[in-house]
Length: 396
Ligand code: SOE
Picture (cartoon, helix red, strand yellow):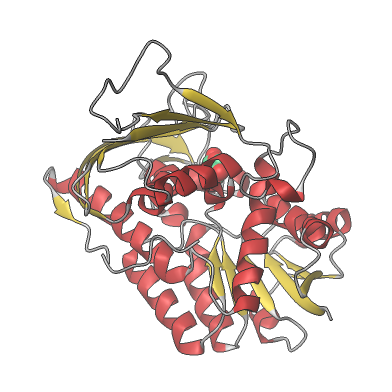
């Protein structure tokens, strides 16, 4: 028996496309799921653009007022793909109307908003998730499996970078349409909320809670023309951010993110080093996970020899995470599949009664780290994150 899941999507940008594609593909590749997404309403302020998007993705209707959408009886779930400053009000209203919630990252502009959103979904008892899609890259999910299998041993170091280069030109305006990520009043922060939130989510998923941080940020271009006012205005976002972190498990972390790394388009990497092994991932080479295994001697004999080295695993076999859903071994999947996996895990969680992660409460922990990073950059000192160490970071 299948059930329709009638979706209203708020927003139609880059993420609107990625999510719409996931709704369209889900049933073909995860046919065992009971819920069948139906693209019922596309909601955005600009009717003309919304209609164009709705036609392309076959949404049944277009609406320009999100308040009407969250109150409709023929909608089961709201997908928030609109800019960050809209998340809080939308999510709280949708929860009050009993709608399921799927929200783009970062969950909110700050911890205070994220707490209110978490409280709203928990009080309403509705299924909720945040689209931290990189957990659903098969190679990253395999890294998690390697950690769970205790192949890393005692963790010592975690190292993450997330680099892009699309804001280097001084004449890139801020604000409006695709450029709201540069407007602090709309985005909340710069690379910290946009890129490091991904790195932090992956890091805490693989290596547990981050307890304290010390950070520095820079805004290289101090003024940009604002598209909505046509005037030069101060830039309030962090263009670059670096921070040191301590994890609850005793390991040390370094995180670096910028939109000023010429040549780096979406360079998202991490490495985890432990006593028994290491894993390394690079999103520009997303089919691979690199694994170094320091084999323990049974007899006290030598541990490493002339053939010891890093292993490059092509994550395309049926036994790799998610890969039994796709093609034959050796054939690859890409960025868009991570959203299909996230959606499938979310629905599987609802149907099995074991909610998938990250839900709002889990994403609130990432928000805590982001806020602590920004606070540390202001105060120039270590800041405790207040991340709940009981949070089940391990749950998939
Ligand atoms: C920023 O350029 C961005 O689009 C992020 O907002 C996304 O979350 C990331 O996946 C790709 O880069």
